[in-house]
Image (tube, rainbow, N blue to C red; front, side, top):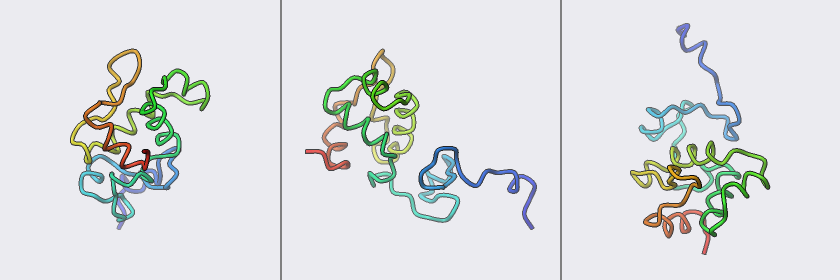
Length: 118
């Protein structure tokens, strides 16, 4: 029998392209709530906007410029990118502590490789 808590849980997150609802605990287990394997190193686990932001930052672009051209909030994308790739790097890969988010240099080459950017 399905509990009231399970009945009230959303079946997908808002804005999710994959249609999966994934919690930190489920991601840590390597699965989403549909039982599918998650692959943090798979660039397709990033949304198109997330992938575009990483590429933009790797090319030396500004987050403010990205926000204007893509009509989105870069800080939200940065949080999501860091969350999705945390298992891959065991760290955040984009530092958002300053006025502009920046790719952490130690991870730049690996990010380029993951995204197929030369």
